[in-house]
Length: 139
Image (cartoon, rainbow, N blue to C red; front, side, top):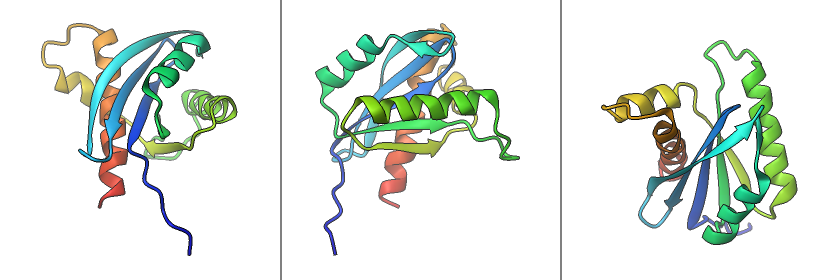
């Protein structure tokens, strides 16, 4: 039976049509932290910026939140997220994992009580997505 390899450093993404929240997490500490917000134009990120983050952090894996509604409807946002996942898979020689993250942005807004800006909410949403994935690894 092959040995299961658990990644130690992971980047998490909360994809949106205008912004992508990014978080970083570690399996050693089982924790995630917000990192930054990337801007998109009609769902297209600046791939050089994404590549720079991947290069700088050298993650072992990537995690993307899938906004799957309770009724499992294939929404236009869900389709765009699936395309983003495929582009990550095509561009980087890393495992790309997904986790259901429906309402993570809403949860992030509750986490940031002063609601300073959407730009600050996106990395927290990515943190919540990544923390959910990390928690699933060890449950």
